[in-house]
Length: 164
Image 1: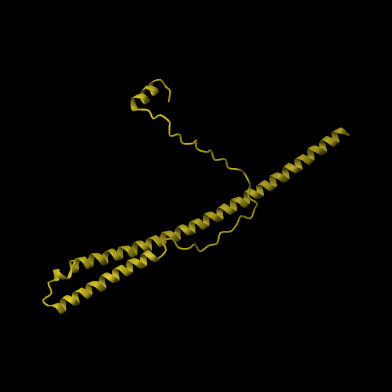
Image 2: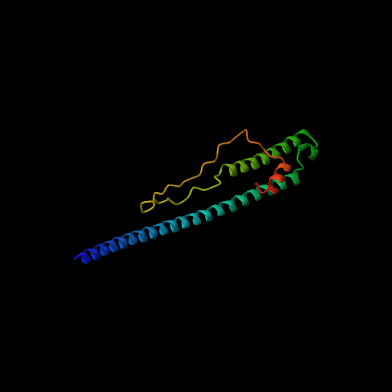
């Protein structure tokens, strides 16, 4: 009779272990699914960010070309164009001003646009209860302002004696 009680205890223990293993496997599968979906989400976000960076680089390149063309054609100031009269000088100054304002407006619109687009996905909470394990982070020793700093010769001497 003691053997039947013992075998029943062993059988119950095995059942409990099997149930724990099944629960652990389920949690692992949920965790793998969660991390896989997170990975897919991050991969999609990375593609969006790369496309955004490429678009910004294209816009900046276009802006740089416009500025280069402007400087090449206009040589910088109204006086270098040597207008023959005041009316033409004013006309050149207004053209230069509108060109510069257009370049500044385009540059400021690039600056105002967000570098990182808002993600098009909504993060989903994990479908399992997270494991609660304490992460122990070792603390740094307190700073000692009175510690002695060694010179190069003192360090060499300590190394020769295998003290450091």
